[in-house]
Image (spheres, rainbow, N blue to C red):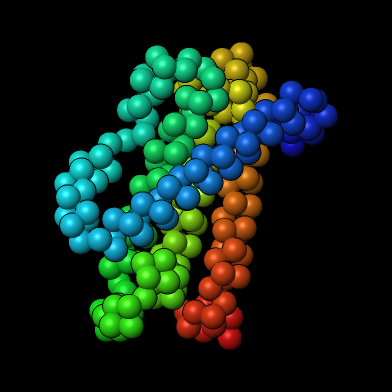
Length: 217
């Protein structure tokens, strides 16, 4: 497998597949992160909206992302958009739910104090909601980064979107077992790196938080 990996690393096909996988993963993660944070803060901050959307969220959240594969293939074929839909859908719920938990955890006294001082909605979000929700946002980012990578590889493997997943499928169907497992090792290493980077980003963003300060000390 090491020999096969060395041979793969010397080909342009491998690096193109690696770039396609990382690109799809990054785009899907960013879109899901932005959408989850914005909608989570809006829904969590307005009780009427939260009550109106609660049943819809609970209905859509358990739907497996892979169940969308037939619809995605019907609409976009084997284009990158098909896999991107799976990545965004799965990652979005990871982020949204964490942000909702974070907004719900805001101290009612702090919220009422901001209201008494007539803070604008944006000022309230920036000074009251965001500091409390940020640890939850970073947890959603860390979980979402892993889920996004899983769905990216799965989409490439099942749909045939260009990337490492597709190359694994091609190696499997052609009986190239060492090449197949070499690519699997690469995807595993990417997962390790993604987790390490997410943990590093979490520690950097939350270096003021008591839990991170205790961990560092």
